[in-house]
Length: 448
Image (cartoon, rainbow, N blue to C red; front, side):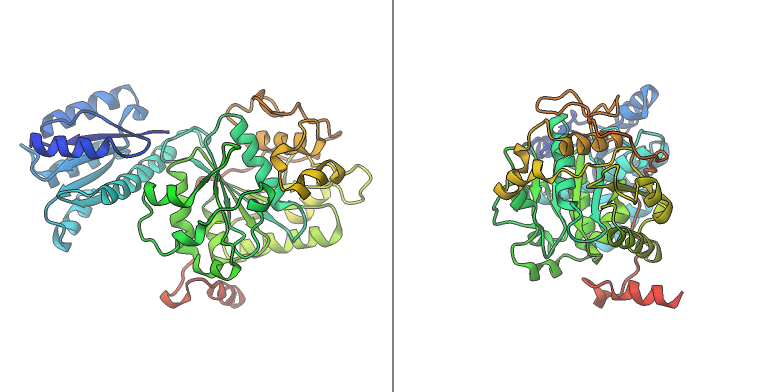
């Protein structure tokens, strides 16, 4: 996952300084600087003639570029190459120039001389914007897009249905398939991802809550690189710190992770908060886990209706995973699909807790045997959801450590899952004093 950057600077000293800083950015692929506006437009036109995908994600325009003035050049690039994020570098960072740059189509303004932190933040934001535009231009939703990885949320209908275990297995399956994967514990008051993987780490998602621009370096300090190949962003050890993570912080954290990883799996727990509601709404795929009993199915229906009232996620856009299923249960997946109006995945997860008890008690679910029918089923579901590199078959990929195809019996009926592209959380309008609470949503829902 790389971000291609094309700097345009007429001053050789400025060009060298910018190239040196760009070379320090993680996952960045800077091109040789172009010396003038004509060379920049010619280079972009040549790349665009081959394919939109050949264009760089980010173009940096120095204020002393010529012969076309910098703002006019930015306007020209924005009009001719809308899938490229343009950032202006200028010694003047006042509001007048900032407004003029935005009017011209720039995606950011960096002061000269540029600092590493500011350069990283502006490049990341512009690259993510460019990746979103390219997805809307027809790029497959599951294609690795560099700064536009896929986000999957896993929520539970109620406590004890297997939400965290499901999220962990999805992430492990993707990592085993070769995808660069991050696992986020957004069950802010009772997160157990660290306990399931036997991980203790001093940093958590709460440490990112008060940061306005999450740079790659800051994100790296908060993420734990586990031996399983997963990048873990854990819930705070002190549950009361979960209140520090509001919807704005959640959006920033998810955007930062999306820019660095091919797949981001988020454990949202079973409670609706501002943070996990923002994550669910912005996710490419939202998964809801339930068990085939009356209480859990009612809870699943209640959760889906709440999401709809809060305009977070439609029922038909939700993928339902049925856990602890057997052919003897009275409530079968087809009935759950009918009751909740969601899309139930084809593969139910069998009731076989004896297979899990030893690794769960030891806090090492990554060591679950490949012959486990539960693991086979969950990895098969991960393939159905498109979380693996090449899900050519309904079963898990033939990756090292991957289990064989699941043999769980008759699959539950279900139509193809609806996957929507991420969008802004514009519908979750909130006052400045309401951060960290979902009270405004609930009040608005009662008015309808």
